[in-house]
Length: 246
Length: 210
Image (cartoon, rainbow over all chains, first blue to last red):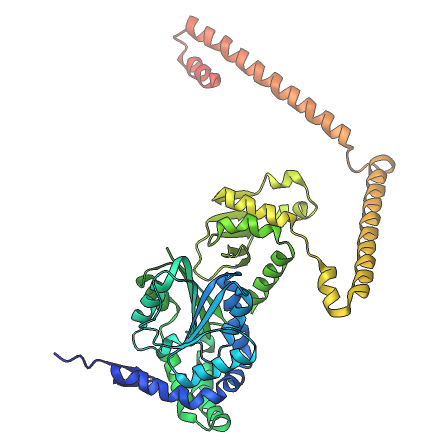
């Protein structure tokens, strides 16, 4: 019996073992211009989505927060202000280039945020440790989303909450326009601004392959979270899911 | 966009009224739906005692229904209007949230001071307060003047005393009629027992006795 299972990498089928490497290549390539591209691609809206996620998290002073796939660290920065000196924010990413950008940014901002390179499917933290775990625009790149969600649930304290901010299924009347934007304009902007149209083609394809709002809600419930609810942001371009460990 | 702005507004108000956090925190994770006519909004209590708009698939723990006709009375702080609000589900949660909303105060001078500075904000605040007070006083005076005119000079509306007297008379008549009906039913029952053959009357007596 072979354990060579396939998974998707954008619209392509690839071996599961190769997906992490391929995703890694994409993010090594875009790391230095990741924030600039995010601003251009979302017209700055990604900052509003992230702020909304922080507001909905219910995090207060003294809480422990885990930022998974935190990359350039903008969420960690917002959470660091919320938890204060008594709390703790941990920034993680599987990609060393992205994590390097985030770590430097935390240091430059004078924030004491530990940065750890680790796989979200095998988190190096004890059970019941964090008050809040967040993954923003990272879950769709994970090979085994179910395993990653189960790990996030494991490290949460009872009463803790998991927030997943991710691209989702857009409101139907806008879908045609959104397709044109994703598959024509996005790779073009990637070519002009980051000199890398392929990586941005992957980003657009990976968004389409990601589970829609209801499917992700079910996946979170299957991972052992409860009272899962979601918010559609910008007509469903992005959805914020929130679930509790009980 | 709307969710984001409304949530920010709620959280800003809660941060200005930090006493509310201690009241709300024990209910964290719970939500209340407020309905009035076609409008409906759900509010969820967060773990830090703050408030946010609830998500798309939220199931409310309490539902507060306010008839649209009651809204103006509630804004005017009419205590009797509160009795007509209906609450389903967790009534304790809904009443605590209502208490928070009723006592919440927007410190607009503080917000304004961050834009224009302390002294201009204070000036604008006092001018606004005076203007609001003046409009309120003028409205009350105008309403009193019109009601006096329509009651005394050109009677179109009844005086409160007359309405109360009329209501008392109606209540007396209602009680008298009820007493009379009971008495009549007793007499008719007695008659039916004495004359059992008269079945038509007998049936109608029984009906009347109810």
